[in-house]
Length: 369
Image (cartoon, rainbow, N blue to C red):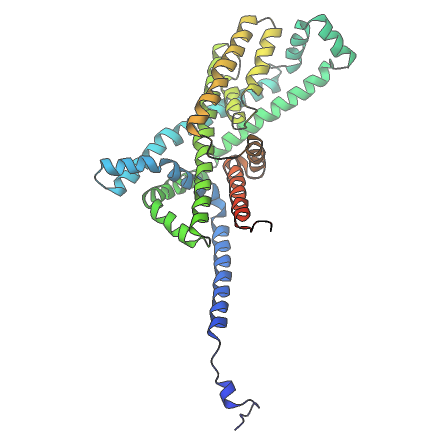
């Protein structure tokens, strides 16, 4: 007997293929996961920096938390709270103090340039007058002694650079609400990630749609690079910047804190380092007659500042990242160009995940494929 729509009754009542239903359900779930993940990322985007640093703090201070749990007889909440308070004391407060001091010093240099108290042309002329005659003749032959042009270039660069540093540092203080909210989110998230990080890591590990071996490789590579970038590079940068700033202050160089921060910043770049600051200063001291100061700064830079990188970086970082220096430098610069200071972590981390993913892909390809 035919149905009204022209189809046999048994065809209309035939159940759906279970495999097709399961496939449709999986695709629907995948779309839903993508949509809600993008929506959550959009909501959290204004505070991505605070969230990222909260996760980094939890990753770096997890060993300290585990030791505190053992000492506090398993009281996880107390151990996590003590860990966060230590982060506040040894990381956040010193950073805020240095930022405030840097803002004052940069503002003072900017005002000195604007008022004419600090005249770059005079500095260049002093260097030129101290040069040997054959060097002066060579510079004059190539037209490199236009002091007015040098003054405009140096004054503009120095003024803009110091103004930028002062403005950015002052903005942190002026935009108090966002700063406090971001700091609260970072510490609040760090507390829960420190306390529950192991359980969350297991959930993430289960959610990654890869084989167990590949999951472990990706997670290990990510954790290693983040630890190396923050714990190793930042500590080395701070030590080199501090040593350079102390040396410049001892030698009476103006703006020692500003130059020390710049040395620390440049120390984040492998194969470049703090020498881009202390070496030109040392050469300036030499050619302007301050011979012992210049020689002392060169000796300090080579023996002390330079060896810090060779001694501390292998201890703090090791060779586990398996990333060449040129790739670290390029991804660090690219990350900071796109994302600001947060990019010095995100750039190398993306590069490490790129290498790990392609390594897995190559291993999985059949020989000769």
